[in-house]
Amino acid sequence: MFFRIKPSGERRYLQIVENTRDGAATRQRVVATLGRVEDLEASGKLDALLRSGARFSETALLISSLQAGTLEAAATARIGAPMIFGRLWEQTGCAAVIEHLAAGRGFGFSLERAVFASVLHRLVVSGSDRACDAWLDAYQVPGAEALALHQLYRAMAWLGEPLAEQSDATRAPRRSKDLIEEALFERRRSLFSDLSVVLFDTTSLMFTGTGGESLGQRGISKDYRPDLRQVVVGVVLDEAGRPICSESWPATDAKALRPIVTRLRDRFGIRHMCVVADRGMISANTIAELEARGIDYILGARERSSSEIREVVLADRQPMVPLTIPQARGSETDIAVKEVVVGDWGPGDQAATLRGVFQPGRGLP
Image (cartoon, one colour):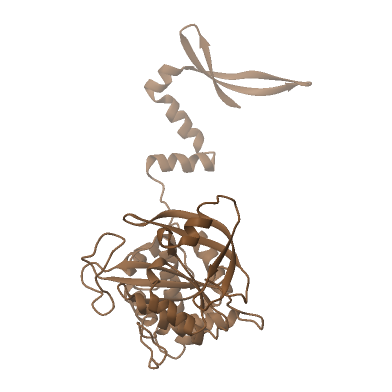
């Protein structure tokens, strides 16, 4: 059965109609005519009738109570992001590594759950530890229900806690996060693991207010805030795009690439390394030291300062452009260039980035 409005001249009547079957045909039978629609709406009789009938329908009763404001809503929690990221957290070994390193420290709470909640918060919305504490109220994170704000602070402080052994430190001291990176790398390393290509991606971050006195320095700012202290953060990725580790150093220290590359080679037992870095890392001393250590590299080059790029790559718009570039060691490297990206890297500074496929063992530019 259902309601139907039956027009009659200028008037409209509300009817209750039932579908009935007459052999193979379906016919409609008027059960009752309730009256004119306008009169029912004006008198409120229609609302009263529906509320009365809602007593015999659980679904309609819930909707009616919600509209009346008498329905007591239960608490809700989001579960999608914690479930998906929780599976990745377990599969990558992050949970096991942190639990192992935190064992015996006597924190009095689950350090692994605090780190998990903080990382998940940064992935979903990002923000401070205080924002994470409030954000957790809307999510169901197993094991994190009883975490307090000061415990989130302690977890982040542990990640940045300097280690007693600092023999391999570069611009920044070795911290607990370095042990996590090394342990995760060992977990996925196999007999055939070989970091033949390492992508070293960098960006700069600014300190606002107080902070950055020890590591941050003032210099050229991509955000046009040279008045603020900055720090460069570099993330090292393998050929598959999986993160290996991160490094940080003062923003104005262009020589920082050399000790960091050396440390990466020793730290992860890398036999063959190729560093792909941004143009800001280029300097004559940097290139000379990388070559002295036998480390291959691909560095971004300015379009106007490289005759090979101007005369060969930019002049030919084919999908694949063969290119031979001489090295300082006297050899040559053949590269099949797959893509040429021309853009602005700074005010008035056009540059070309080569993304290519090289032949292992032949060296790189």
